[in-house]
Amino acid sequence: MQIKFEFWEQIDMNTDIAKSIYNLLIACDKEFVPPLSTRNTTTQVNFNLGCTLSDLYPYQYLTDILKQQNILAIVDDLIVGIMSFRYNYKFGEAFDINISKDALNNYVSTICINKDYRRYGIAGRLYNYIENNLPNKYKGDYVSTRTWSTNKSHINLLYKYNYSLAYTVANDREYNGTKLDTLYFIKYLKK
Image (tube, rainbow, N blue to C red):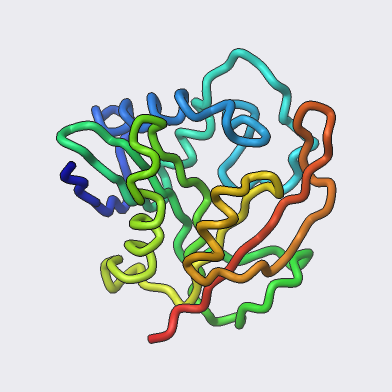
């Protein structure tokens, strides 16, 4: 299987690419905690506000993704994976994450792989791309991301690629009545 990776600075809402990303988000929506369709933005910090489970699709989430930088994984003409990130993202003062004030941080807000294309190493290749293959204008000193404490496959992938757990927000999310932690990971990129 031939997988192609493409970087996009921004994606226009009225394109076939945006429609394909939207379909991917719909397919993965309920796998996220909380579901993408309940979120206001890709960098929402408080998951207890505005996160009501509904039959809505992740349209608001899509509009935020399209304003960010994206790396797409494509097989033939099908988008099978996306990594959306915010260039030069600054964590709020509430976070005790050790990043120099002047450092450039690429914050991965979303990584999503089509179910039929998992186990082909696409997620790892997306992390490799953001670390090593971005256009010079977008190269950063760090890559950071977050996930929830029971997302073992993502956590294991982050450790495999030498990300460090930088910050934990205890009991930040809820899934089936169980409180989960939000985990922030970071990797310093040696130049």
